[in-house]
Image (cartoon, rainbow, N blue to C red; front, side, top):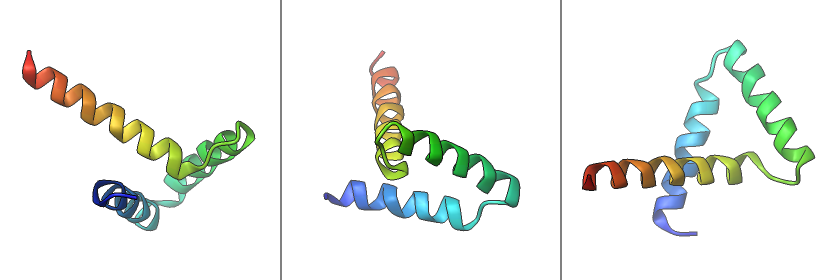
Length: 62
């Protein structure tokens, strides 16, 4: 795991720890759906943030 991935995981931890009850319910549902598909919440979060970062970098080039 590289430094960038560690930072993203820390961000996810912070997001969960500071979430409201309603947000935690939503996060729990997302996690449950991902587990049914064989993925972890961390995998999905890392993939989604990587996609967002890629889109931002591409938009800056244009």
